[in-house]
Image (cartoon, rainbow, N blue to C red; front, side, top):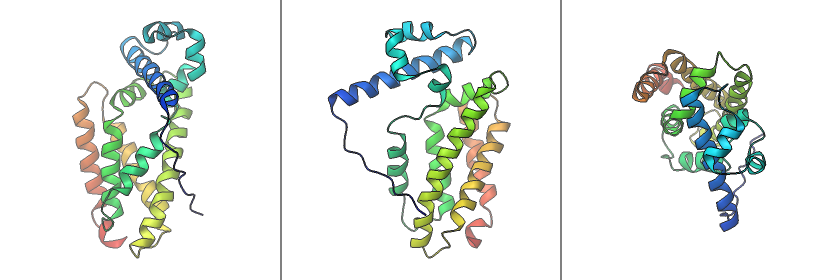
Length: 203
């Protein structure tokens, strides 16, 4: 069953201020951890650098892990807007390539951290899995109606989503955290293209 995405009204001034604080804390946390290392950065360090109290920090994030993996409150709305703006007749695989290129472009710091910390912090593996499952579910739900509208089999939505995540996994494994992020994006673009050869004519 396709789950519709709820459209929420534009936030007021108070909600916007809270969102700005949320993003500020996470931005500071990600950059501190990237610079100093996950285990050496304390919650107090993050609160001090973000110029908030420890109590305020805990109002937004219960742990350092949450700063890495908690979804941005407006994240799903951005996904929806990006996908809905793609040409109606575009092949879904081309749409997925464009989506992942855009999605990863906004997460360079986060991806570098995940690459560096994947062997250091066991909890990150579960966090990565949760993020992937959330995005996979969203994409599968979006793809179903788009495939149907194009006269394609909507049941292929799960297959296309799974293939796209396989591409992401291959690229993430090949990319090194000390390489320019342009290398990651070039690998992603090339691997999507290679994986899609023949796919666009059969699905």
